[in-house]
Each structure stands twice: as C-alpha cells, then as structure tokens.
Image (cartoon, rainbow, N blue to C red; front, side, top):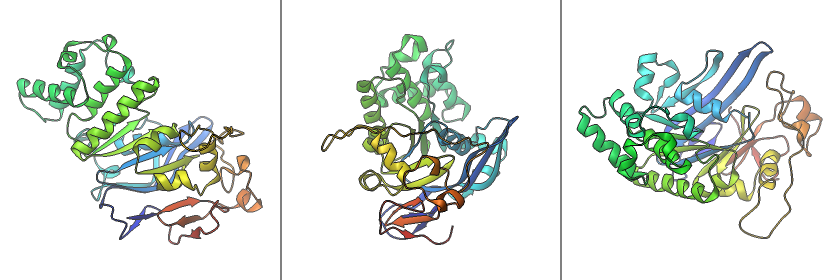
Length: 342
C-alpha cells in the first residue's frame, strides 16, 4: 500500500486500512484567538500495523489522538476532515454511538499511568468496570477471570487485582493501564507516550510487551511519542508532525535512513544513534511557532537552514520517493517528485 496524501494505491503488500484519516483540521478557541492545532492531517493505518507519530511538544500529536477517540475539550472545534473506521466516519456518530466505539474498537493508553488510575479504587476493579460498562462480560465471575487473563497477558500477577495504584511500581501501573486498554478486544490501540517517566530498563520491557501483545492479538497500534528511539524500535511506519501538520510519512527504515524533510533530519540529529559510527548531537535552534499566529508559507522556515523566499511565502507541495513523502519545497533527496491530487 503506497501512501500519498492519505490516499493508498494498490501494491506494496500491505493489508487494507482499518483506519483512514482525511484532511483533519482542529481549532481551539481561546481568548488570544483560534489555535490551529491540526491542519489537513491525512494518513491510513493498516490492520496489524504499528505507526509512530513523532514531533516536539505542541505539534498536535495528542490532539490527533483525542480526535480519533472523540475526547475533545469544550473549546475544541473540528473544522474539516474525516476519521473513517472501516469506512464509517466516527466524527459523525452520536454520543451514544461513539461510546460503543471507544474501548470496543479504539482504545487509548494515556500518558501518565498514575493519573489514569483512580487512587481510591483497586486496580482490578477499574479494569473490570470497563469490561462491564461495554457488556464484554455479563457475569462477575466471567469479568474477574477476564481481568486475570489480561493481567497475565501484560505480565502482571493476578494478585494485582486487589491492590491500589500507589502500591504498584511505575512499570506495573503502566502495564495495568495497557491491560485496561485491551479489556474490550479493540482493533486499534493508541499509545500516547506509553513509557514516559519510566527508566530505560522498564521502558524496554513495556515496549517488548506491547510488541508481543500486538503480534499475539493482531491489533493495530499508533505510538505517539517525542522519543525517536521508541519509534525506531517498534514501528513499521513513522509520521513526523510539526505545527499541527503531518510533514513527513514513510516506512520507518526509510525515514530514519533518508529523511526528506529538514525537520525530520533535525530531529534525527538531536538523538544519539545506537548503531553505526558515533556522531555529535545537534540541537534544533529556535522554537515551534505560535499556532494562534503561524508564519506564512512553510511553518518550519524560521528554523530551517534550507529556507528560501518561496518557503516563506507559499505552503510547500507534497513530494515523494517511493512510499515516503514530505511537504517541502527543498526535499533532502534530489530525486523526490511532486505528488498530484491533494
């Protein structure tokens, strides 16, 4: 499945997409004006695929996750686009209808595990509540047995059922949150910074568990993170976000090996490589733009060493190389070609 602007052509050996996002646009209404959190975001997710979304804080990653789950604050306004789950636009569903989609079709592993769990309820009871609320199990015995199976799946002892969140380590809490996300057998799991605040050893264990669970259950996973190392380890494809836009998308190996967008290259240069020759790290100068008043043309041009007058005046086209594409006037690969039909 070749990807270009959220449109897939035949070939490539990839399964048909379970999720397709087309032209998604989101605004937050604030006293300082409208904040353009998402702008024309398009991509597809195949069944069983791992897709990473990376970028600096404030680039729109979590806003995108909240759109997919329809978990938006009162000041959020969707101003365009579709979120097609097996062809059905979840943005058009009623509140009752979207409740049947959340956790049953799409679930979310929240950023902070401790904040995701209610401190006054036992951990197992919280997982059981999600199962009962969606009618996955109709008996108390069946529900508890299901929780025990979920805990075993994520590497937790059944005794965790009776414990409170504060009695668990950070890694155990994260595993419990993952168990909760899997409670209703979803097709898609969105993992929003699933290893934040965990030490590197626990991070590796959690990521290995997620990868094993994905292979065992055949689910699709969207990893949202700022950590390029996480993306390199567990994803099939990676999308790079900047200022609310998806500026590059492609196979993980291709994007890491030959990025097309200067922002992607800058992100790569700011993280140490665990393979190959050692290289000095390079910080990315400047700050992301104010999305209440974004710059004209390419939003990255104030920080880009390749920027020209064209970049400052006009929005860049989408250019591609094989299954990889980027939005850039001056892609890093000389043989990248313009992609038609946006």
